[in-house]
Length: 322
Image 1: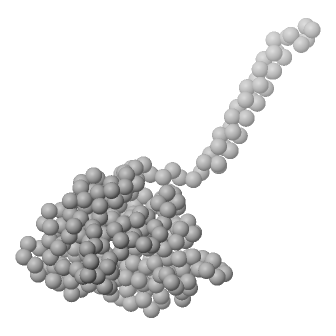
Image 2 (image 1 turned 90 degrees about the vertical axis):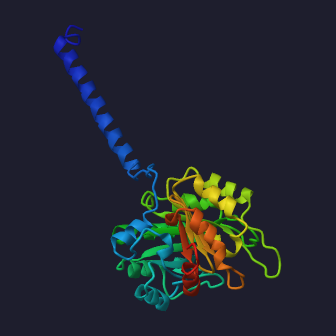
Image 3 (image 1 turned 180 degrees about the horizontal axis):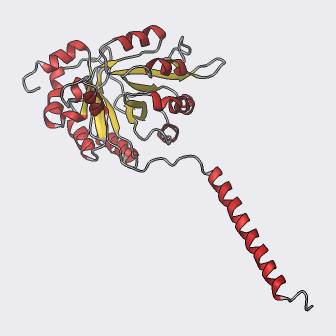
């Protein structure tokens, strides 16, 4: 008993206990760090840097979103080559998951189910350019694998990245929107904090009848969906539906300087600092260009993109009050 209670043995026992505790603490710390090595998603509020980028490149001369030009449906090898050689600042393409094996993201618009170019190869082409890209998702299943591919090349992309999907039902819309919660969970990755989220409504338009615009219920539902996002957001809006929607869309942009609009005519246009609008019209839409003037004159010119035909762009710029 005298030996067991000797001061030297007690000190030795205490030292070993301390070493054991420190060792266990170190192991637990290493394991915790390994399990939590995924970088956190940025909580910083981001603003749309699209105009700043093209100004810095000398591609536009003034900070006016109306000067941004678009190339659309670059969903094939020929189309992407054509877009890269064009004067367009932004290249838009549609993404689906290939229906046959290998099931991978491809550039295609429904009802097409296959393509001669995959997203992986498409990104190889565009990353060598100074143009921006807009990826338009047509299926939920394509979002997660596409974001993985996009994250792999982000360091090599020079231009802005826009991520687009219709996530809510809108005026006249018959198509089923993508589930907003599922879409955003897949699209908002740790590397995506600088992306512009282009979030729209499904819409429709019928000739020779009254076509209602974006209702208060529609814009309030969208704003509630986007309120907690940290990304800049642009709202694609159909040009033919804008005449009856000014109050609603103006209010929407006032809710955040991260919002913009993109007005489109079978193309697109945007509005708002963090929020923006994209105004568009279908092939059969009856669209009066002068209906855009209230948006042009009453809303900051940095917050509305116009994805219009060249002839419509020229007509808009020639209007008194442009």
